Length: 282
Ligand SMILES: [Zn+2]
Ligand SMILES: [Zn+2]
Image 1 (cartoon, protein in one colour):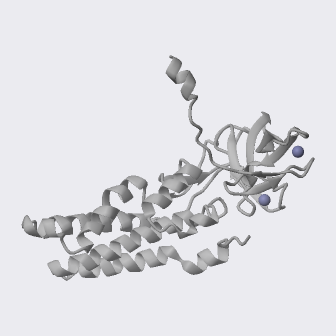
Image 2 (spheres, helix red, strand yellow):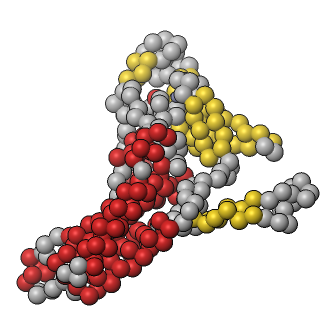
Image 3 (cartoon, protein in one colour):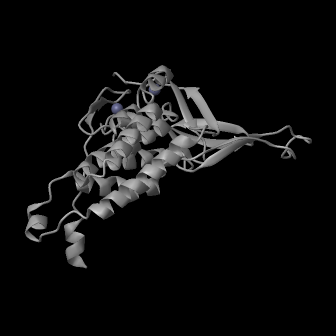
């Protein structure tokens, strides 16, 4: 199995923040040309700026993002995924520090470091797809109905997005990402599995071999990791002993052998017919 991981160096090299800045600069130039025909090019650049800002936010979650999701390019889908990982992923936040006078109590004097503005899911939902609708020739139905593009409305939307993107780019601090994490080497393959702990019954998955784990707090500050397994009795009448499978080993279409007697078992996805004779009797 081969898994593709983004490294910190890759992410620095990709520099999404600068790409977003360049895109919004080009969008502004198109808007300033005051040509209605240039609005679609501004829209295209603004969509790219929104994509870059979302990819940049995703980069701070690179170690938690399943490598299969690296190909997700739609900002809405990507941000929704980040919110599943961390419910605070799209919130604005600020950073301040101070020396506690009493351990465990907030310091009376705090030094403010800065504030971050994130391009949030609501903004992406409101504008990203709406901009896309201007990037196509009107449909036959729209042309027949004589629906023309409202250039004033289109320009107004572009201006609003420009301001949103610029405000996001203006902050001196970005990618604030705090969390409680737990990690351990996968018992199946040794790859480090890392999980952000947002609450009880967290499910972690090894991105290398797909083993899944349930994480729970046993005592204050102490977490237990339990690999998720299924126990299935061997179907050979002469055996009947329990077969234990990791959750990730159960794949439809696969054949597994009983570890006790060697009898092969096929894994099927089944929908069984209800007992027809019982239904008729009722
Ligand atoms: Zn593993
Ligand atoms: Zn058996």
